[in-house]
Structure formats: structure tokens, C-alpha cells
Amino acid sequence: MSGAELALLVSVFLACAVEAVEALTIVLAVGSTRSWSASLYGCAAATLALALVVAGFGPALTQLPINALRVVVGALLLIVGLQWLRKAILRAAGLKALRDENAAFARASAATRAAGARAVAGVDAYAFVVSFKGVLLEGLEVAVIVLTLGANQHHVPLAAAAALAAVAIVALAGFAVRAPLARVPENTMKFAVGVMLISFGTFWGTQGAGAAWPGGEVALLAIVPGVALASLAMTLRLRRAGEAAAAASEAV
Amino acid sequence: MSWLASATRWLWDFLVGDDPITAVGVVAALALTALIASTGTVAWWVMPPAVLALLALSLRPPAR
Image (cartoon, each protein chain N blue to C red):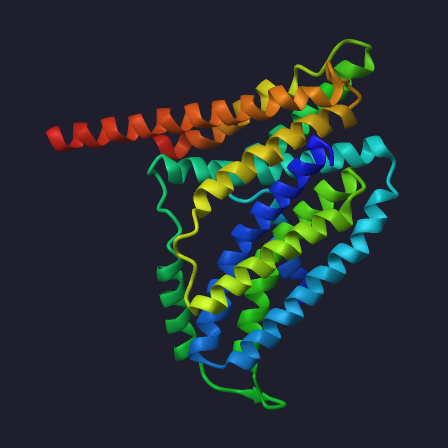
């Protein structure tokens, strides 16, 4: 397995695990307050829909001319990666609240309890729809990551396998403890995924635009640490600025 | 039509989110790379600083 393939696997696995933790919170909240069967049906239906999206678009993407594919994939990875990394940096610097799975679970549970009951074919329709929407929306971002990373290296099945492994591990852990996975270091994982998406996006986008990297794929060995170090420096700078502002306001 | 509106809204949120400068900046940087590369000039150096500048720019408003 090449270094690029390994990086692909790790990136997809981490991205999928983070989104799966968030989706699990919704499925657990709906299941424990309304109906386990409806919640699991909704989760299964959304997973099937996501698998169809990957199976449908994957082969089509790999048919695109290589440079067109690289520039589209590069742009998508950069846009998604910059959004992920921005939020991760703001959270690591203390300027944005960390996602609290226990609080999200409590909010979702309260909302599902308050909703009215309506059964369709013996299944709690509200629980099904909330679970379906939650898993689908969290999963669509991962589907795009699986498709873009996988298609560009002609390894959609490998990327899909990494995604499925992440979902399976998170699901097993969640249903074993029957509680949201609040201790998973979601922000650190998002930070790492953001760095990888931006690095691959920069590499492939540049190639797709017609430019060649010195050393070919070896350039990734400079791009990944470069993006990581710059991101850490931005985090530290923002954290210090925040602390200085807080100290100044206390002094007044 | 509501699903179409929802899908369009999701796509907009996914690609643009609350920071349109990032999406526009990525496309502009890739276009600049393609323009320079088309003249036969070395162009790999455009994207790394452009991407880091976009990241720094996207972090600026909340830091104020």
C-alpha cells in the first residue's frame, strides 16, 4: 500500500468516524425517547441511500478526464477542508464552543419527546424521519469525501471500506454503552481531517490546473506538515489573542 | 419542489457555508494557477500560500 493510499484510508476513516459519532447521538436520542425500531429503520434507510450515492457517482466520476477530475476534486476538497479546519481551529483556540455530544443528546431527546405521535404501517413516522434526516445529512459530507478522495486515486471501494469500518466501530461502541460518545476527541480528529483534505486538495487542484509539483507525490511530504504547522501556529496565535483580550477586559 | 429547494439549500451550505470568500478564493486561485501554467511558467507555488491566506482570512472575523 502506497503512502497516498494509506493517507486516503486514514482521512476517510477519521472523517467518517467524526460524522458517525454525531449521527449516533441523533439515532440514540430518537431511539431512547421514541422508538428503537423506527430510529434504526431510519438509520438503515439513510445508510442505504448514501451507499447508492457512492455506488452511483463513484464509477461515473472515474470516467472523467484525469485533469478535469483533479481540478474538481481539488476544489471540493479545499472548500470542505477549509471549512472543517476553520471550525477546528476556532474550537481549539477557545473562540467557539466545543461540540458537546451529551448536550446535543439532551436537546434532541427533548425535541423528540415534545413532538406528536403518528404511526405509518406500525412505525413511528416522526422517529423514522428524524433518524433518516440526521444520518443522511451527516453522511452526505462523508460521501463527498469518499467519492472525491477515492475517485481521484481510482480507489472508491477502498475509501468506502474505510468509511464502513468507521461506521461499524462507532455503531458498536455506541450501542454497547447506550450513550453518546462524548469522550471521542472530535475536534482533534476534525483538525487532522481538515489538514489532510486541504493538503490533498492543494496537490490535486494544482495538478489539475496544469502545473507540475517538484518531485511529484513526494511534494505531499512537504505540503502536509506545512499545512499542519501553519494551522497550529494560527491556533496558538488566536488562543493567545483571546487570552490577552480576556485579561484586558478583567483588568478594566 | 420542496425537496429541490432543500437540496439546493444543502448544496449552497455545503459549498459556500457562511464564508463565500473561501469558495470564491479557491476557484480564483485554481484559475490563476491554470493561467500561469498555460504560459509554460512554473505555477505550483500559487496554491500553498493562497490556501493558507484563505484559511487565515476565514479566521479573522471571529478573532476580532
